[in-house]
Image (tube, rainbow over all chains, first blue to last red):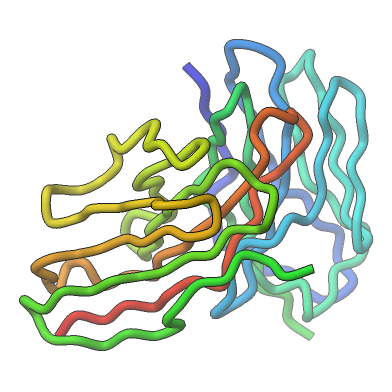
Length: 110
Length: 115
């Protein structure tokens, strides 16, 4: 079947630290991959996407590379800010279906 | 461009009352999704429409929940009768699913509290 597995949270980092949130997937075909961010009291917003192997999605200093050999799409940022505190969701799309991970809560402290 | 619009943003009502949540998808999108989010269960897909037709309603918790999409620009999720355990944030999302690179776009949600 199709599924997404994210690292368990919560994650707490100091400002300017390096961030990695792991995401691995299982898919029966060739999925597109997405990262969403959810700020408190808001809906999920698309952060970045990659639609084929070796694609790198990037936005707002965040990056993720579609790794077919390891079925992974890890989210990274070199220097986090307090404003990055949110819940991050990894998702895949295959056919007409979307599958979301359970979300990883990130808190950045000054 | 207008995003996905949900109403109301907040709803507080008493147990046993009927609740109707509304969603206007992004114009041109052909698929609409209803989700429920709670601390305990996270984000759950309730139902998914494609071209106004329900495709997968396996996530609808029970017969008290029903969803309709009478046209491409409007959908409702109804709970009747409501119960305290239905308290959650309900999200609507839309997409054009035939394009593989098209993500879902989410509304801001309806925060529902059943007393």
